[in-house]
Amino acid sequence: MKAKSLIVLSAIAALLLAAVPVLAHHSFAAEFDSNQPMTVTGVVTKVEWMNPHTHFYIDVKDESGKVVNWDIETGSPNALSRRGWTRNSLKVGDTVTVDLFRAKDGSTLASARNVKLSDGRKIFAGSADDGSPDSKGGPTKY
Amino acid sequence: MSRIVLAVAATAALPLISFRAHAQPAAKPAAAAATNDVQPTPRLPDGKVDFGGKGVWAPIWVLDWADKKWVSQAVDVPFKPEGLELFKERRANNSKDDPEGYCLPAGVPRYTGTPYPFQIIQLPDRVVILYEGASHMYRVVLMNAEHSKDPDPTWLGESVGHWEGNDTLVIDTVGFNGRTWLDYVGHPASEQLHVIEKLRRPDYRTLVYEAIIEDPKYYTKPWSTSFKVKFQPGWEIKEYVCLENNKDLLHLGTKEPK
Image 1 (cartoon, rainbow over the protein chains, first blue to last red):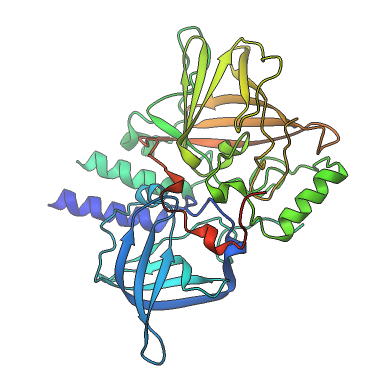
Image 2 (image 1 turned 135 degrees about the vertical axis):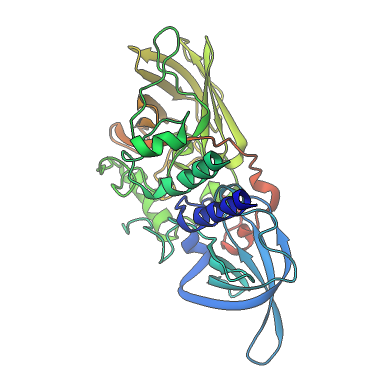
């Protein structure tokens, strides 16, 4: 059991430390509004552990109490799994809090940065280098 | 069990450490972490560099082959007016038409700068490169062969290879279809693209990759770029089917790649 808990700890360390880029197949700036960072809390309704990006969906109550379903995009399963995520890291019914950037087209699609899981762990889900404001460096302006 | 845990922890920590500092033996990760030794270049029986091993090459995401943020040296790209115009258009709209967003093949040299691992398999008459990135692509380099007279255009072109001494694998590629971008920021490429790649492995953990880019449609003269790729012992290529759930196109404000 001790060994198992060490492996879990290592996996958490991997989640915290790894800086491999994960959101890496399309333009961040064309799709998401970097001027609109948001934090939302909701209940997971569906998880799509698929390429090129894992998506999960959460029901979020807006100010009027109306429930809106958000589509949250993260890195690819390949990159997330190398960081220690598994397809079971998020489950339907989990309450999660997500730091995100909303799509520019006004839809409820968003690109996730950090996800705080129901057990309190906060894990990085975005890209280290995708051109978003908190990434290490987007392309230089020409 | 503790060794496995250490190995996992070491792998987790690697991306944060500088490139040189974590060059360490793959066979005994637990011991290597303590000594920090640089393990020598592996070689085949004939003395040539062996680019394989138990692991994969795991590149950073090179957004721009000319920007020192990602490559060894900044490049003053010798654009022709046509090339500069196309490049500026792509910058102005934040690369929304990037073919990679459509899960189309990244092409050459871009595959080496996508953040998806690759493996190099050396056979007596050919070198095969397996790319994980969009989408799970392979490339065959025929060694000591001549190019076809007029190769049909393809995404990855036609590659022939040879050795310079025992240390440098040279890959010469023509026959491109002109539909790829050289990188995310959109340095253009046409059917006239000709790429010479030079691969070296100065130590076990390091691949030095150089690409010389020639395309008379968009550039006044050849230009070159280089960067280092690190070896990740223990990693494997994973399946990557990009089209499986590519929802972004609905939100990118474009209908088809240009």
